[in-house]
Image (cartoon, rainbow, N blue to C red; front, side):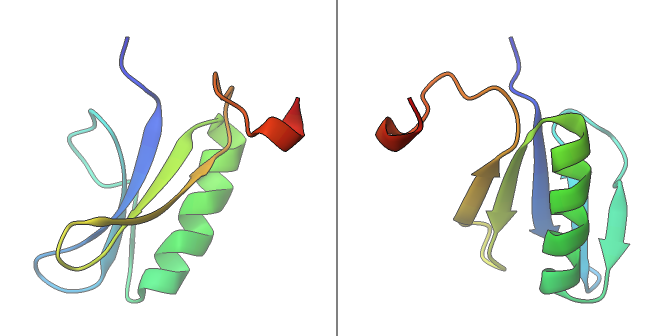
Length: 77
């Protein structure tokens, strides 16, 4: 089963995109990374997905879980 994720990724032509995994098209395009993170977080919370934030080099810099996390942190039990 594919995980439900939204990714904040750099757009090769400039700016930043929010894209759902498995989608052909971008959900949101913004000029700044922070705007993409903010808008992607709202979308991720509404849809109960994981938000994966990438750097310009493609490496993951951060992630937020807004869905059912099968491995919650110990302080969340």
